[in-house]
Length: 297
Image 1 (cartoon, rainbow, N blue to C red):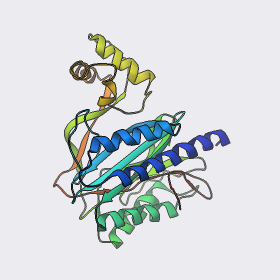
Image 2: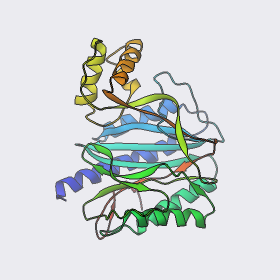
Image 3: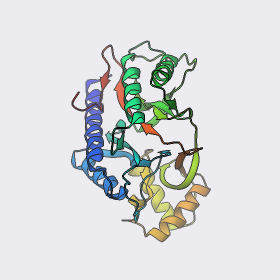
Image 4: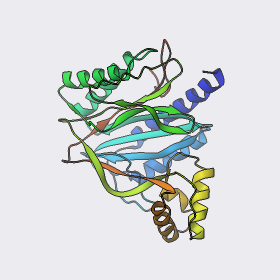
């Protein structure tokens, strides 16, 4: 991997990590989810990067893909378990990281942070993806917690935020071998006992998928924005409201979804309502791996 590319991954990771820590500091009872999301976005841009996706602020049994609406009034509760999933990119090179906030020490949070550390320890050129899943499973078992079985870590590439390989968070027989220069995100989710998520609720996150003919001029404008401003990276519906009115955005998005021009990311919720904790880092695979999103360690 060229030094220039490594430097861009490092910068994106550092900014994403700083934004994650900012989000953790800002999260407290009574604070609006929308205010946290907007402050994180502004921070990423101010530091010289762009959001790789909208801040996911996923509460309790929601695992992923909740980002606030433009008029969202929801606030943090004193007993909430809040997943903060942050992405920043520099010229398409991505830092992807997550942490979980709780007002008091929480077993699931401590466990998921331990699981992530254990998985990172085994990373090097030649590590099999199946070994990572086994390590995650064994670490979770040792701490007496379950895992969300149908959410995975993933590869990263330029403007590709969920690429190959898919890194399962449970024991598996994947023979895919990591090589020097690969960039991956390790992303375990813990819950009291093994769990499973399904699509549930509204969709506020989308990404460009393909050019398709559409009737509404607002739909054509949004498709241009999705392709040329955000490339293939996800964006929030609320980000469009400075350029298109909310009512017209809703109509246009339905049309774009209908012709499969945009890919939607519905909220993912644990099927039986179990609380979930998440932790994530981005790693460049080398003999001594570079954890780009780790701050102050």
